[in-house]
Structure formats: structure tokens, C-alpha cells
Length: 299
Image (cartoon, rainbow, N blue to C red; front, side, top):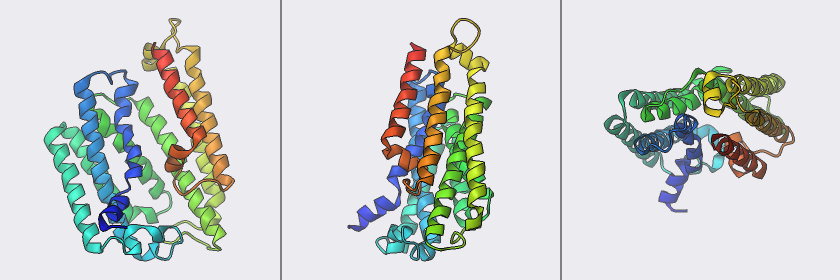
């Protein structure tokens, strides 16, 4: 593998899909057809991809010694020696500077500050917070919310309390699912605790319980969201409430989350639930169903 290919892989391009959250406020507000706002959200997406790559490279640099002892993470570019420490440092600095410069020169100040905060939190997470039980999950949820708010600020579309509450519950469940997967893998390797983390294998049951509760909370918040004035205005049936068809969203999201936890417990999921969902046919069908439902309700 060439050094350039290894460096590109270390930048985690597959994870860029997480930054599509930047478009969510615009799409859900039915304003994606406004070209200037769409362009601004697209720039925010690019900025987030750049600073996220910088964060991934910094994380690999910080964890390179520990990663070499992990059966999965030892394949990461820096740990495997495919990317030099100097090369990773330079690429990290260039990606961070490029993302921040692009944000500050093209986006509203609030959006640029949110993207800067995203990078800062990523670095704090990599070097400190991921070792603290509970705070690591809160940091991961905050990173998802910063993507959401940065996209909204860039496009000039406010993020409603309902939307960020829904996103917080959803990504809390997925973050806890990720920790549960890591704990299950550690247990299978005969370990008592996660290396470089504050979790012990004995925490697995509690992590799974809280994660499932977060999944339930996601469906509850979504149901309440569908009853909000905003949703009634966008998807109303003319009777002062959201269209009955809209309630299928609760069934789809609830069913998908239930399946994700079931697949994880069955040992058929990798280390990242979001990346798994991007390759999982059932998850893709659920996503397509939600998109189709949105189109049908908007028509």
C-alpha cells in the first residue's frame, strides 16, 4: 500500500457519512431547494470532514502504542507503520487548518465557531474524555449535535428543541451500542477491562440497559415531535394533528433500533454501529422507507 493510500485510509473517509447531519436541519425544514442555503450546508459538510479527519489522525497518534496490541486497531495506518508519525502530524495540521480556514472565510460566524468547537471537543475526547466512563458517551453525543447545529447555522435554519432532543437520544443509544460492542469483544478476548478506557467488562449489562432505554427514549421523543406545532404545520392532515401516515416513522425507527441491538448481541456487528448501518441491507431499507415516507407526506 502506498503512503498516500494509507494516509487517505487513516483520514477515515467512510466516516464522512456522519457529517451528512449538516444537511438535516435544511431538509427537515423543507428548504433544501434553496440553492444558497444548500451550498452553505455543503461547505459546512466539507469543513466537518476536514476537521474530523484531523481528529481521527490525532487520535491514531495518541493511541498508536496501545493500538499495536489490539487485534483490530493494529491495522490502523499509524499503528501499523504505514503512516509515519511525522506524516500524520503534518496531515492532521493541514486538515485542521484547511477546515477552519474554509469555515471562517465562507460561513457565518456561528457556524465557524461550532466547527471550531467540534475540532476542540474531538481533540479533548481523544486525549482525555474517552477514558472517563459516561463522559465519553456524552462527548460522542455532543459531537453529533455539533454537526447538526453547524449545518443549521451555516444554512441559516434554526435547529428546533425537538430535533436536537431526538438526535441526542438516538446517538446516545448508538454511542452506548458502540461501547457495548467493545466490551463484548474484550470479554471474548478474556480481558477484564477495555484498554485505555474506564470501562470494565462487568459494566456491559449496565451499558446495554441504558442504551436500550435511550433507544426507547428516541421513539418517545419522536412521537412527541410528531405532535409538535412544527410537524403539524409541515405534515398536518388538516385536522390539527400530524398525518396518521407520519406515525409510521415511529415504527420504522423503533424497529431499526431494536434490530441494531439484537444484531449486536448476536455478535454480527463490527465495531461501529453507524458504519455497520451504511452496509446493512435492512438498515438501508429502513432509511429508504423514512425518505419515502417524508416524500409522501410532503406531496
